[in-house]
Length: 186
Length: 89
Image (tube, rainbow over all chains, first blue to last red; front, side):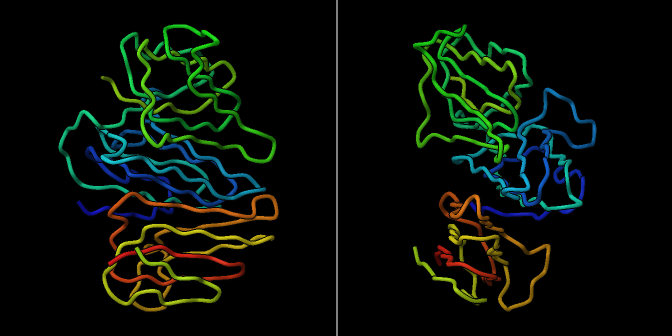
């Protein structure tokens, strides 16, 4: 399997069909949004990742374990291309795998992602705080991951070296936080 | 996996290879840009990775999963600091 790249310099539909994303990096003092879409519709539920640079650090990136983040529809990127660019790393394999990584956008509201056992792959944040629990509600002893932005760096992400088994489901306390959670269903 | 220490503009490979990662350390603003190039030309569309540090963040790295990013060659555009490019054939 060859991992390829494409450099993107303007808002555009980079892919118009499904792909597996291995990662992406951004440059510049601005925010880029990645939509699992073949056009510029920008549906909130299909916001699959967001990266945000700052004047203190004009760069952001995230890499996903293979087979990668599964995009069903394509890829549309929008953001601060007047100051930076985006490089997308991907592969062409369309084989569906139970290892495919799924995304869940978080925009301040709480999300009960699953009541069934899941694997938590990681997450990405560009504003506020996001807490992820192994369960169906916010139980302190079952806090599996916390993401938080700061005053100088407006992005942060975690990809675990191997998935975190969440036997009780996945609950996201997103109050005040914006970003995405990456997971697998078992 | 091989490595190449970068302290100047460097042609890392003139043949097909796989970029595995880049790291950069410095105390002030600088970038290390790696191009998919068999020569020293710097085509925007062949910019594979840009690693940056600032006075606030003095070390940065990006690492790709195996087998790495397939390139027809590798050229590193260096400005300042000490960098390392990891690659394989």
